[in-house]
Image (cartoon, rainbow, N blue to C red; front, top):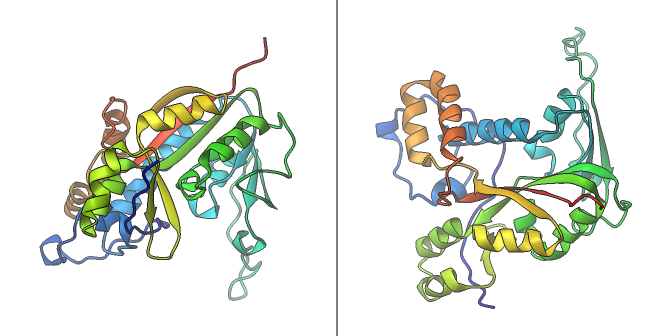
Length: 288
């Protein structure tokens, strides 16, 4: 086992791009797009649009019971509920629960709520070991927003996901890739650690807030899924278009977002694992 270290940052909700021209923006390293909350970048708006489209493609065709471990920032639970699924969002603390909006704003009634055939329930519990959840409970488990990279005992977390899935149930997950880990190591001049990173059994990267993230190759992620008793369906990058390319194209034409998302969904069908985050889908075998 050869742990390595570097800096990175936490992803957030998409930021609204400003009108600052591209040629007046300060130069950023490739890793800076993922290590800071950059308000000038249109990349995060693109990133979360891609994540939403990928989730929509993955969701079961029939109404199902889903478990969401991705935290409210991901906003996947409302999307799944709108598609007709009942979703349990597991939160590490009550402070993370979505807050209800006020019933009146400046004396006026709020806008009518959009109809939804599904339901979202927030439950506080252990998001690593799922100790409060019974076996064979959910048709699907969504663990996006890099949650399993932040749970360093990823093997144990995947085993718990497999336990709460019903036979034939599926899981969708997103983790940090070794590509991102190596870029951040190089940016912070951790050259000794970087030289061992490609062959490391476990690559651990410290973030500025003091947390640690675990990075994976596609092969390592496949092995972990198999070791947890799950059958991998596919592993692919979340995005392959570079952040600088997306920022430039959106600055030239903000209406290009839909075309960029469609381009990304087609690009990630390849076997190229160059993305900074890996997305995977796996199934729990049905009982004989």
